[in-house]
Image (cartoon, rainbow over all chains, first blue to last red; front, side):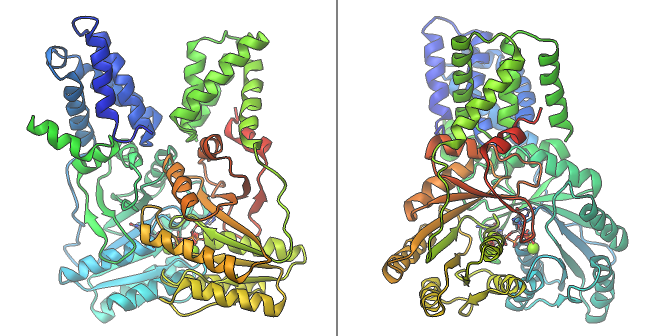
Length: 307
Length: 291
Ligand SMILES: Nc1nc2c(ncn2[C@@H]2O[C@H](COP(=O)(O)OP(=O)(O)OP(=O)(O)O)[C@@H](O)[C@H]2O)c(=O)[nH]1
Ligand SMILES: Nc1nc2c(ncn2[C@@H]2O[C@H](COP(=O)(O)OP(=O)(O)OP(=O)(O)O)[C@@H](O)[C@H]2O)c(=O)[nH]1
Ligand SMILES: [Mg+2]
Ligand SMILES: [Mg+2]
């Protein structure tokens, strides 16, 4: 496993190269192969990696690296900075409507963590002094409504449901009235998991969006997703239109390269990350942390910064 | 998808114009395999093997090469794929990380075995996640299969203990145990699996014991870590790969097979009870390299 080893690998590579004499541009290119492998092993999409490497190559062949006493560290620094850049500025704000209620809609593949994250966001928003309403618009998965109700009960947040013998579009429409009736200012809609290639189910999302005009459509993505993440995100974005991403299950040991790919192909900000099953396990997104994680080198970087 | 079509087209062009097996060809191949989540190491392994066989057999065209590649991949995948025989009684424990499709797979297995005339009991061993028990109960009602449950927050081992006794008393052929999703990095939760295993070993001595690790086909390289660590906590006897109805090709199981050799038992291809198929290496490889 190349985990945590990019730094040492690069050092090795440069040591070998330098023993031949002065470092050349070709040597830097050679070293970039190590970077490429590290990114691929972190599940960054192949095409995204290719573009990224080309871009970084240009920066890295600058004198800085060639003349550096620690070219391996220089390269890592450049790569890391570029990754952070690519993941964009921190933006973990929810777009609250100037005239309530704010409508937030969760979408994503099956099992990505939508229902759980709806609960977490409700908890988060409630803490800000707002009055969220959870809406059970998954009428397909067995006990999906019950799942949301249990979360709502534990959080003391109301849950709007009309059972599962009714069109989700109607449920969502009606939830707006319900919010007015009970004085909720943020509506959080939990939708059923679906494949991005399931036209019928994607149409349902379009209809819901059309009906309730959400202020935020958030795509929930499992951080362990592999190369296909780009297709998923692209499809959801092109067909439904998304405003941001939430990356779940980052409490494991996945390197989470999918996030980078998705960010690169959709340009949408990652707003929050999920770090556990409990309702308080929702954190703002930090591009620098994810960059270090993708490179498999949490602490190495702070050492380099100090050097 | 667009991406794949472009790739397939490129490869097809390579083949149609009977191009030589140059570095461009291998690069395309690498791209295809990595984009299917086969992973860097295994992709390199496959390409090495391919180059070796090409030399040995004197292969010149990319068309022959494609056939050869399929053969190599099938070789990888059919290793240890002995036939799966269920004797009575059998306990199947279903484990895996969060949201991969464990509970749904249990419903599919129950449906399949029931159709084969077996008496099934399900154990609601996920006492943690909100409405996990209710989810399994709904499946039980739909399939007309008994579900043994305790209330939320109780000890999963106790549920399984009860389910074993119920299976014995009611003469069930197959007991299928649901467990809560858990990330393999959470030691305490992994210990809970070892405890469940102990209960089954102790209480159901004469039963055939199966542990299915469920993997989501959409998962990338982390699935390797999942197999590695779940294997330490319990005795995995087979793998189920779910969500192959999406666009992800599940190439990660090629990497898994090259490293771990567990048999792949079933694949999940949808959310309904009959969306389960026995794993077939040939079909899988054809789908993986559908160009
Ligand atoms: N460890 C961990 N587990 C999570 C996280 N977010 C969600 N989960 C778990 O992932 C599993 C799936 O979560 P759900 O919220 O049911 O996912 P979903 O997207 O609503 O699923 P469907 O409605 O079936 O599409 C559950 O076991 C959750 O507890 C997270 O950040 N970390
Ligand atoms: N498209 C598709 N969806 C599936 C498949 N298998 C399961 N699902 C869906 O994936 C989601 C999660 O399935 P579950 O069976 O609840 O997963 P789990 O592993 O039990 O989840 P936790 O208990 O929360 O860890 C549900 O929406 C299922 O309908 C499959 O083969 N294809
Ligand atoms: Mg849900
Ligand atoms: Mg489950």
